[in-house]
Image (cartoon, rainbow, N blue to C red; front, side, top):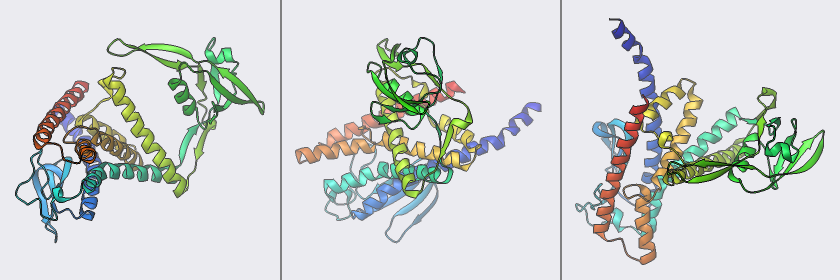
Amino acid sequence: MEQLFSLLGYIPSMMQYILAFSFLITVVVFVHEMGHYLVGKWCGIGVETFSIGMGKQLWGRYDKSGTLWRIALFPVGGYVKFKGDEDLSGKKDLSSSVNDSENFHSKSVWQKIATTAAGPIFNFILAIFIFAAIFVFRGETIVEPYVSQVVKDSAASKAGIKEGDFIISINGSDIDSFNDIRNIVLENPEKKLDLIVTRNNEEISLNVQPSIVIEKDRFGSEYKIGRIGIIAEQDPSFFQKKKYNIFSGIYRGTQETFFLASKILDYLGKLIIGRESVDQMGGPIKIVQISGQVAEYGFIPLLGLIAAISVNLGVINLLPIPVLDGGHLLFYMYEVVFGKPVNQKVQEYGMQIGVSLLIALMVFVTILDISRL
């Protein structure tokens, strides 16, 4: 009986996790599919179905143009079905004529490119505006580039950096936060760095040669990262609250969105060559856990997670894998270059391979999620 009551005690928490996950996925997928829908309609393409969720239909309604708007049982995806569009095997819908003015395949290659690219682009736009709103209404906490400690016999110590120094420039680039220092040092392990620091109200020029740290990827290959041996100040008085207006907020939101996108691509690249672990990957179970935990801290942190997931979805969808938007764009770019579409059989085989890869990936990340429980 005690075990039953203990299990019942988890239900409210589980419901919060599921609701947070459903809200997050619904927003991100809706915006992605709305991008396809709006640009497709603008290009004169007929839309047969706009679905949020997968599986059995829970609610559906046709609009005046004949589009079925539906909500399905499982909130793990969604899709827009254009008139004449392919199914998952890559086969075209032969129920409508290609000569039909609303048929997807009757449109120019550039209209197809615009419609396909719109989904990921709308995900990036969503992230920009969410990040911008957070920066405008909450500001941004920045750790000042103040040297709290210098590690004994480190590169910084040998270069003459002292506790209490403010690092204001590295190789001509302005330094606004301690994180800027960390990024530059990590990415330049073999490059001498020209620093300008302020000490006792005076600017001092220093040269630092980062210490090279050799690490190994999972294939046994070695790679280098740089370290100089300084530690940031943890006193809150050295934390700045930077304020933004709507214009600077949008600019900062754009920076954050593209920084996050570049980090995702960097991770994927390093994963392929073995310099990153699969431990950072996650599937639906991990997203449910993270969204539920973040929701406990309030609506603003959940919005931040929605922005991050939206960037992830945008980047992943642009990968050149058949079935994904990036795979379709690859086929259309072939058409632009060679003046003719990719052979239909090649498209079908590509779609089948793409579906197999996605299923394999979903199974893998789900097993990874379960192993963490």
